[in-house]
Length: 230
Ligand code: NI
Ligand code: MN
Image 1 (cartoon, rainbow, N blue to C red):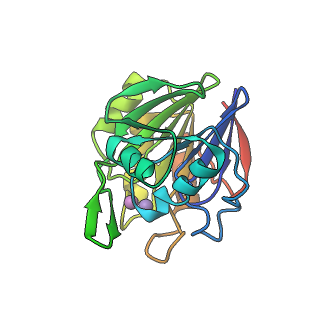
Image 2 (image 1 turned 30 degrees about the vertical axis):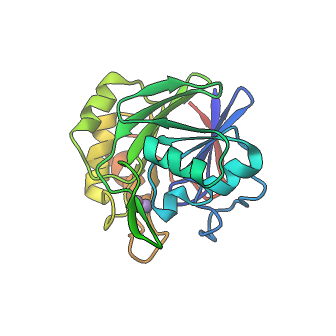
Image 3 (image 1 turned 90 degrees about the vertical axis):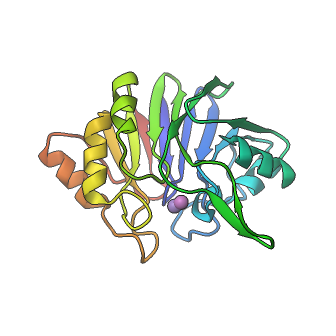
């Protein structure tokens, strides 16, 4: 058993067996997150890619709590340069067992970089995560286009909950996210990356309603809401 808390946009905190992992902690930059980055206590910070609405407060949280940053190699190295003590670099298709749980990096079709004083710095490739804690597996798509790989992710893994981006413009929109949900076949589908900015559509409820028409379970989580999985 595990619990899952949503902190707006693409940020989720999973907890099981007294361990806590947060994904894409975009908190101080998102007034609707429902969380204070200065009081979040976690063992791990997982980052799907380097864009500000995902890397967010990852460095600050890891430095304050001593949590391990888990990300693609280049982001892990970047976080170390920023003063994070423990950063574990991985890459696509690889899995690793940590004390808090098991993490597998999945393919995401997107970009990953930050703009600094020297121009744009590419930080490896973006990813999604399969995070297993307390025997429960969450698939977090990261920012991604719809892709054929999702069929394989669903085929090879028993997924209890899937957090899927659906706001369009930068990621899958409504129609593509519904196709993704069907390919992945999770027991519960949670929309993310919608309505946070004017550029991304408010598609969360429609995503859930459309899945329900096809007999699939979905749920729009409110920021700060916690649910039990499975
Ligand atoms: Ni992005
Ligand atoms: Mn994003």
